[in-house]
Length: 148
Image 1 (cartoon, rainbow, N blue to C red):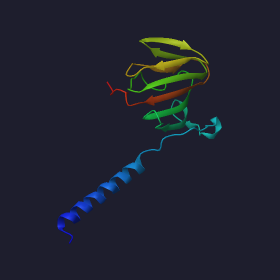
Image 2: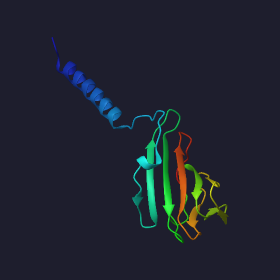
Image 3: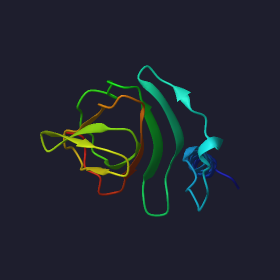
Image 4: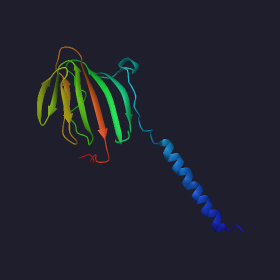
């Protein structure tokens, strides 16, 4: 004979199972090997230029991997100096930029790379006569510290 307790336990188990299914469905899928053509991603205008957002997803080894490309108009910066817990790699595609690294501004051109360490102040601005485009690769892992 089924008791009230049996019904309550069965309903609680069913509810927990539904909750796990819902949680699994809301978490983004792990990104697998893929290709991303430059022209296949829309170049969206911003106040300071434009941005192409390619992906932002967990991978097999990272909580999140994000890649976008920014184009800045001459004389403009993407944002004020800032810091964040994730690390990032910036690769200058074209133009002339200045990067704030370790408290100093450094002038860089096409092909240069900038590593921004976790929670360290950094910034980037276009100091050339034409547009400056750069690639930004951000990642977060289980070891990514909290924001300062």
